[in-house]
Length: 232
Image (cartoon, rainbow, N blue to C red; front, side, top):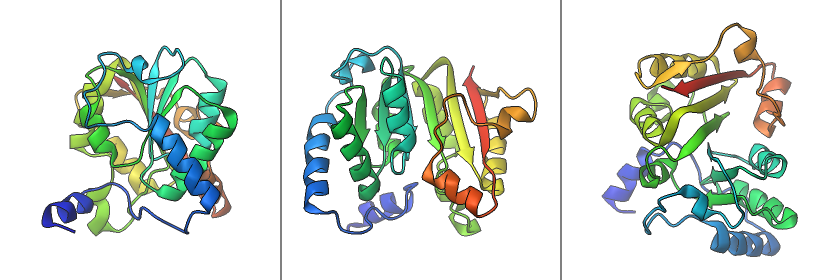
């Protein structure tokens, strides 16, 4: 690994890229789906993001770090008129989502398997209606907090690609990361917290399917917090 690659990796929001080895069928499905649906940031971005999708879509939503794809696939299935861009560098999670995409024949999904910051810099300005960051890696050790994806720099990226009135939705069961996010977003002039009462952040959004990370948190006695911020 070169010095530049090491530095890039140190600043990445994700941890490991691989878990257990993929079975032959999983690897073949992943390769086939990515060949068709992976976004190539070496090519210019289209003027209108809807051009990325094989199916006709209206709004485009970005989900960063989709894990096993439970939320991404559920939303793509129940909201076929919305284009979904899912980002997940962890190969095993991407393989799980690829299998579901192939089995269900979803045409309103595109995928990206590297750092979301790279994709955000590639996307056109004011091109997405919402960004979802759901149960991200909390980087619980203080010395790792700089690797949390919510940062002033990434909020600048969010502000650039979100349409005016667009939403940034964040969920976590880690209190320090919730406080971190509220503090960073409050300091950013482009966003306003939409909460009116406590239920607004204690209750998941409409149509929420749950995720494996949320279920793990509940088993361990932690409850999720669901924050919605609006692009001014």
